Amino acid sequence: MTSQPYDDQNPFAKILRGELPCHKVYEDEKTLCFMDIMPMTDGHALVIPKAPSRNMLDIDPADLAAVMATAQKIARAQMKAFNADGIMVMQFNEPASGQTVYHTHVHLLPRMEGTKMRPHTGEMAEPTFLADMTEKLKAALV
Image 1 (cartoon, helix red, strand yellow):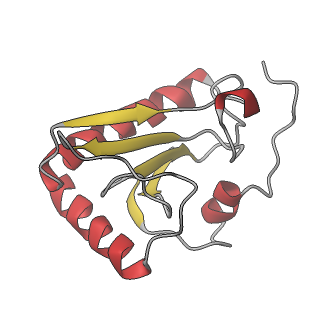
Image 2 (cartoon, rainbow, N blue to C red):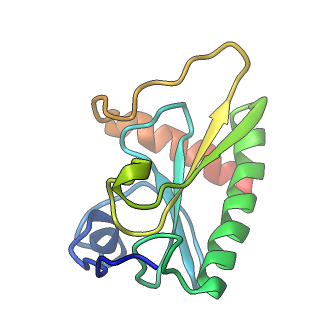
């Protein structure tokens, strides 16, 4: 269990409340998937639970299961949409692991052989690029 309380002012909580915009790919009763604004690869998406939790250490197991089911659905679509050779799944818990946004989230990164990842601390992607990635991924979900 984490010793820190959930902060409802984190960016993902604000996205869930509609206070911050996102490039939404998929949504169901328990989860939301949207594009990472600093993508490490083309098609880099995030899956989050709608219920508040800081990370995997305090999330309700049913919400974690919903996140992973959505992650699987999105990963399969990423393989198709981006002609990926594989999908990297990343999930961080607490500062020592590299977590910087304290709302549970899973990174899904399409990977292509021989293509390097961009740094995550880099500049934000252009909105038109993110919109294009969103549409490609949404089309593959059908």
